[in-house]
Image 1 (tube, helix red, strand yellow):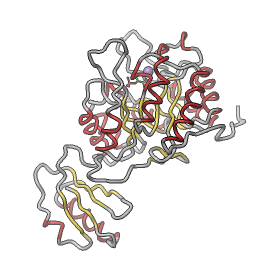
Image 2 (cartoon, protein in one colour; image 1 turned 90 degrees about the vertical axis):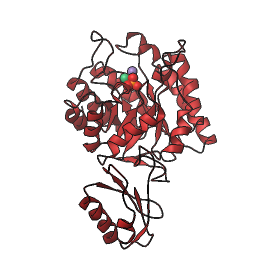
Image 3 (cartoon, protein in one colour; image 1 turned 180 degrees about the vertical axis):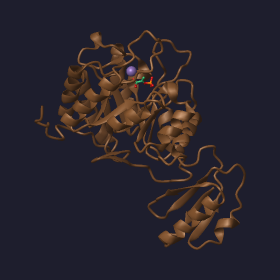
Image 4 (cartoon, helix red, strand yellow; image 1 turned 30 degrees about the vertical axis):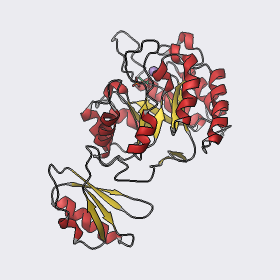
Length: 349
Ligand code: PEP
Ligand code: MN
């Protein structure tokens, strides 16, 4: 159920509604809007009687929410969610570009990539330290050492870190070092991890499982939101279909569908979505035209030597070309693309 407050409702009126929700044994989620505050109710098994709320001061309406996901739905919040990470917004007019290698491989590698990305204005640095590899014999990531190198590279360049949290055991460590927690495709159905990430005070990049429907992705996001963390980006990264000419099938339909069903920012990953570096630029462009709020792109200084996903990683020159193309496309779409050096390089070390 969603409680819509009157425009003139006071803070005390909102608190009264929240107290009433809690007294019934449910959870209350305050959702600020441009016109009015709404309060989402979760934790109820059956129908809630609207009359319990309609008589309270400041309440405009009490409407049942029909979907299995509520807090992340447009039904509950009409305006787009904008997530602020320090000085940068995700989901606003500026496109969010997240870039970096699949895995952090060495201090030099991540520093070199970070410097290059910063020069073209990228604000979000990706790189896996805890890698969920399909084969137990593949490179598993540098773990804590990788987090340390990432932090150093991000601090030197003034960027924010996006890195994967693989399990609940390492969540606290990853959250300590990073700015945005990535939940990978393989973990989209790991409900206990989703709940723990919902308790962490860090924005989340939630990747769609290769076998998930759009609705299942939204329900996974709801697990996070139901624990009080509403700062979630939904990431389309390709799904498994009968098609074998690409690693995955990048489902760009999902972009306008997600924008219709949810207020959360949508990010597209054309690197995993195609599995081929030469398909990344065309599909990245297509994603922006489809209405994505940003991209996550694998970039490696020497893809032939990469310890993971080199075949789908862009070399720096191709990445620069992509950014140039996005500038042109962005202006058609009414979006801006970060450009040039954004923050002076720290002179320490
Ligand atoms: C990654 O971003 O490197 C990754 C492992 O992605 P996914 O979970 O989408 O496979
Ligand atoms: Mn990868």
